[in-house]
Image (cartoon, rainbow, N blue to C red):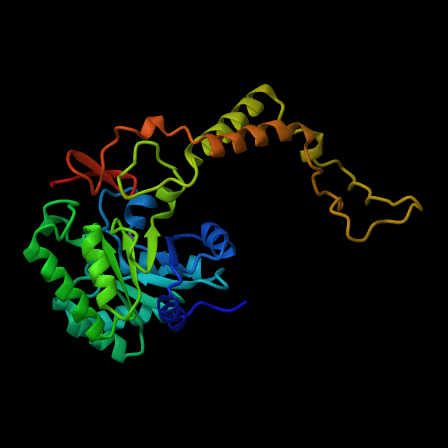
Amino acid sequence: MKKVTIQTLRRMKQAGERISMLTAYDATFARLFDGADIDVLLVGDSLGMTVQGHDSTLPVTMDQLVYHCQCVSRVVERAHVVGDMPFGSYQASADEAVKNAMRLIAEGGVGSVKLEGGADYAEVIRRIVRAGVPVMGHIGLTPQSVHKLGGYVVQGRSEEKAARILEDAKALEAAGCYCLVLEAIPAALAAEITAALTIPVIGIGAGVACDGQVLVCYDMLGMNPDFQPKFVKRFADLFTVIREATQSFKREVREGAFPGPQHSFTSTPDKPAQNKEGLALASSNQRPEAPAPDPEAAPAVQSVQANIVALPLQAARGASDRHGEEGTVKLYSVPGTMVE
Ligand code: KIV
């Protein structure tokens, strides 16, 4: 299996092949996404909201990021893994930024780092790249600057602000970024930036002209029915799937239907499965003590699968929009305030 590298991503842009990127914070999801050939996995500081339950990315620490990078990079075989630099890990000085970027590589096992900020961070980026660490830039809506921005607000709508974002993008390419994330900016501006840069540009709420797209994995999988911002498409309804499975588990526990004999042990190990001649089957999955498939489980699984297709998203309609037009919004599945 060929590992995705920063060179692969550059070649993909040149060949007009779009790049897929998702966040991942643990080994289970990382394995699933890597097995589905997602090109880039971002261990994002959005974990402050999705995993830790905060209402912003600001409380996430370097030690926590290193830990989650390890969980992901440990199991990934193909995808390029990016570690996010948390708030406070690169702003104070270039020396500290270099040290923290190196920690994500050396301890976290990732292949590159991402940091938020425009031309003001060109020198910091130059220093990190000079130390041998590839840097992905991130401009537009930069959640670590939520207080400065006055909320999670679409960026670059005025001519002057759009021109500033374009200049930031060029400055980050010149500083040595190998890739750039554009978050919550008008699609036309993202198209202009994507055409102006030779490095790949990945969008989130930045329209279809970018070289690739990234979403927070739990949002993409529809795990929170109250969170339906404009820029997120739900590709599944895991909220319903997980709720139904959980309710089935509870019901069967209460009724004493689970565990059945097939999930229970006896004082002597089960006999290995035998073929017609009475010889033990070496590769049988009916190993001693392995539970046999539960035929009664099939209908429950089918109803869960039907829900994936049915996608009952009505609950989400009317929910506010993080990068949208007005009102209170939720960022990465938790409440935040949007000021437009
Ligand atoms: O932290 C994160 O998940 C991100 C993506 C939304 C780009 O920065």
